Length: 73
Image 1 (cartoon, rainbow, N blue to C red):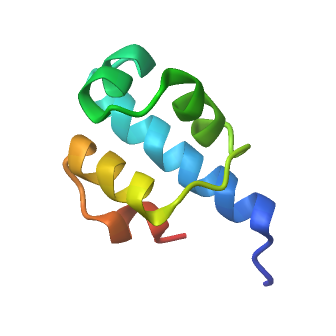
Image 2: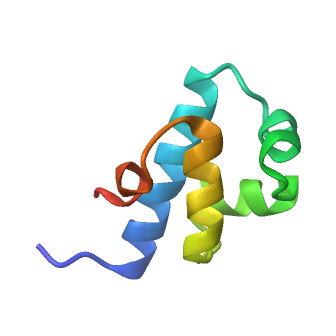
């Protein structure tokens, strides 16, 4: 099975949303804690944004997981 860019981004977005919700955080709270804008978080969770590795690192730290956990599709 070939992994498309769209599927990859949507899978990462779903993981971010699931982890955020499991921590009981709103998108606003995740934005405040991570320093990443809410609009960027929305686009990431929807799979509409191909972000930098540095952004993924910040999100992983904020969500309490390893960066590889976000990338494991």
